[in-house]
Image 1 (cartoon, rainbow, N blue to C red):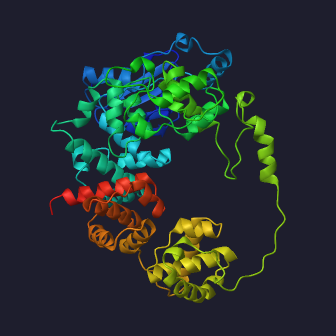
Image 2: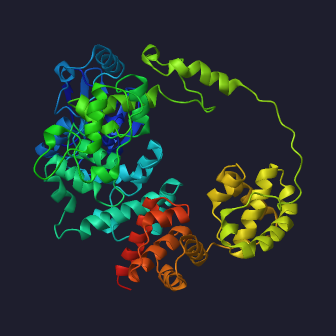
Image 3: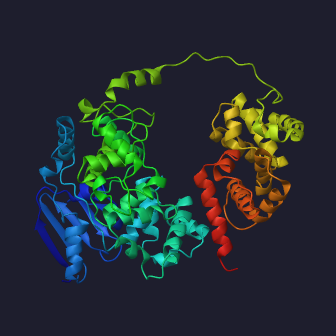
Length: 551
């Protein structure tokens, strides 16, 4: 089959819509040709295979021999042609919702769901890279390490992987590199099997989802993406705020549904038919079913539970909503929705508030003249000065000295004062929190950081790196902990772990409290240091992981 071209006639199918709405697109390089979009495989077992659709003709081009099983995988499962979506799948929907779904199908005809059972690891890696990232960027990161062995990934240093992605794409994968390494490491450490991911995939879908959600850094959306495209489970619908926004605007689902909660996804199922002796129905699913019947109070509901209970193949509906959101329900650079070109504008509930929103955007409030403040001595009392009153005068004096340099940069008065205090605290080792300082002056943390960078570039002011020990002392004073616990926490904080000194301090305080038998909750520590509980848990896990590694 060398240099062979094979073509098939397909009905009600769009290769571009199918791949663009799924993680199958990560496995291909997209090339625009005079004939149309050509998809070229970038990894085994579809390396260098070319696919292109011309009308109802689907063409495959091969550079070398291809096994029959691989061809079946490519033709049926990568393209999504393994299943056809009949109108009967939408039976039981209310008239308005049914009409909206039918119009979505007209806008994006021929959408199928790929089942990539020979590329499970690639799907998992691509979903992790897609966390809070633009599609184009996550595809570039994925392509830069598509040929790396998964087990090797689990042994890499996060900084090494970040450098690899940055050298290949010009932009580092950032925290996603650490997420990926920790996830792969945990998978291989949790079993003696040759392929731990395959072991999970052998479980029933409901149990597989629960086990995946228990793995570090895998949230409900990432797990559902893997189940949908890795295992071909059409009941799994990846949910995020964009899918929620589109489904609410178009009336597919009732308004104000909540996002899936990872803690419950690790224990329960969303659909009553999947309940068994080992797994019970999620409390939020019960509340959601009631809300679907009587849309009165959305508290305690879940968007995923609503979609999976309302639609037999929720994953397919999610693909349509994703394409619509990416194509039409977008925003202009000025933050205004692009509603004028939307073909479903007559179905959109947002039109009820659109006029008010535009009016507010267009309004220009009168400028209020403010008296220039020459010192920061009258600034709002920060929480840090309540905990460290002995340092307040020293900080304010130094901040006033810095203010003279900050004023030359032309920032707003509030930004000038906040930046002066920020630099003074950091240079004196005072554990101020950036969010705390920004809230005190009613500005954004980004404003302080921008002004700080501008100041450091134009002056010789020294800006010290933050140290975990000063934030440990802040947590100790906030939570009224003994000095012995603080000393132990300082010792623990010197272990390799988080790159963030505040989260390193939080983890150290928690680990020290457990060692001396004093009960201090992660929630209390997270509030004391302005962190989320997830950040604290991850920092604790990283310190424990690094400590367990041989020196």
